[in-house]
Length: 304
Ligand code: ADP
Ligand code: MG
Image 1 (cartoon, rainbow, N blue to C red):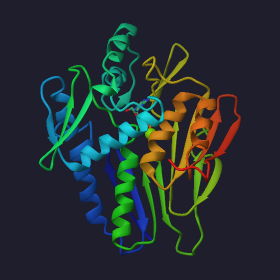
Image 2: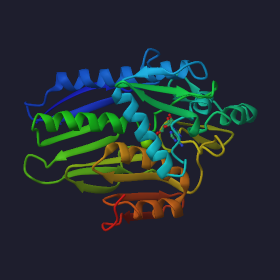
Image 3: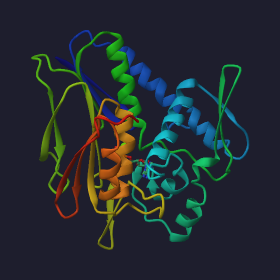
Image 4: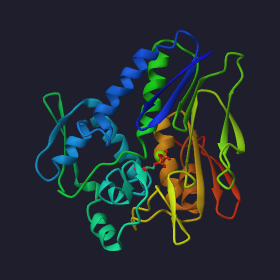
């Protein structure tokens, strides 16, 4: 097995597989995806949609259009706990790429007025795709789903090249493609949120599945003894603090895992268990602030 890694979506993306892995095609496809949906790229399609909020609709690629449709689907599925237009609030917390500023409450309240997903208008005409944000104060931020979308794109390219054994690690969004070379499952360590980095809470074995964890132990800061982190409760605009400190989702779709891990983190354990149980083919591992570990499997008989 050989590996290559690159910085994509502001994070390290490492791909491990045999020598047939089309690394160059993968890296250029990821760069192309960044030019479409990255918020850190001022020229990206979604950055242009943000700039034109309240002004005009912007023509986008079908890929960007589908990504926003997916984001809206997960927003709906999670009763808005996953919100793709929290940009007006998220920017208040940021200093460059880092979550490092405790905003004024009045600014958060103002920002929260511009997070209504029904103001996202999608339209298609003559084979062209358009997105318009009706509210001038509104901004997309797909940080909660982007790495999942990127991991699914890499998996798709690997499958097109008939590569049936590879490991994708996109800044902690993991995809175990197929089985390992020795036909065993991929072992993925779930970090213990209560312990120092590198210590595992649990090892999960997967084949052809993604494993995605959202936790408050990353991208955080402490002010006056309070831990603030980058997963926000869309109802308050504050760091989510509803009892879950780590939320791991396992499924074939890394996009689904990413959106749901963020949303479940926010919604609290009762709702999170309910939602995962209602979905076919999903598994989840939640760590509560009490140290309790809750493991859930989705309903095999239900379609979604
Ligand atoms: P990580 O970047 O650690 O993988 P997540 O997938 O949990 O983290 O996503 C957190 C990012 O998603 C934040 O940095 C922010 O950009 C965005 N975000 C924060 N809260 C929400 C939310 N409730 N819904 C959608 N996106 C969010
Ligand atoms: Mg996420």
